[in-house]
Image (tube, rainbow over all chains, first blue to last red; front, top):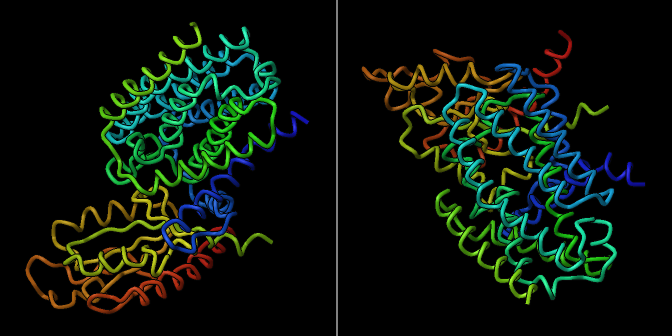
Length: 272
Length: 145
């Protein structure tokens, strides 16, 4: 069952991405593409002529996809939350290295911004894990998932986690890392054809990763999990549609000031 | 069996080769809620390495011709070039001027010509959908090779 879920993770991620494009279009009073649009994109990219820049560029991208998939697999198997977060960090580092391995300015700017965004969101992810540890005296995702929902005790950490979802999913106002208009996609600028599919698929798996960490807050209740998922999904897209992009230094400042103080406050409250 | 899905995801690269911005505004109008080109799967990527359709506006000024060639060469096959507006097709009112190269077909092969000054969104959408058919035949040719 778990193996099947892990194998199908990219497909679920693609469906979420397709749903998101439809929801975003409906919010702008448009019809929008079909839900299966990401899969059509995938199929088209197979037929395109691939341009290979250098070997490292591709190898790092594959490593990024693989480590991200492993992180999702560990979440599904219910492994240690701290391990999962660090493997996810490793996958982000591979993406940064892929960006640095080519001789393109936009790619380098994208990598710099990716590093800065890691500085912004990583402490909050770790604090979320610490919060779960204080409540359950264990980092095991299996144990966290077998409890009743812990949102009441972790409400500030939950808010801090909501703050970093747009960074990871590259949504406004925190999408300066890939900024399609200014730096043409950042790290992904030099990928084409089949090789771009690697990054495209990694993006889908990123959706699964972020939402599966979000579902840890719901505990063992499926109803509550579905409710949290749907409302956060809607909220993230609403904010994506209604705000403009902010600069990367503001991203780091806002996330660290608000997110870190919220999470530290929550930890202090738990300690007392 | 999946052949018909291949043309459902055209990604657009838009380049302004010295246009007066009239056609650019009409292209953006196509992507806006009223005409909604995204329902055909169109994304305005801005990255030549990931796009299929090259939308060019403007009568190719002397300065922009090298960038035009560069962008065209960076796009992976199969690709379709669409000339939007009278200037791009023939040079339009600027034809014969010392700083203008009289249309993009002197430099790159064009698949669809869209007339009009500025081209209306309906014409642009018609041209893009026509370009999709050409993209499909080009795909077949490159598959057979």
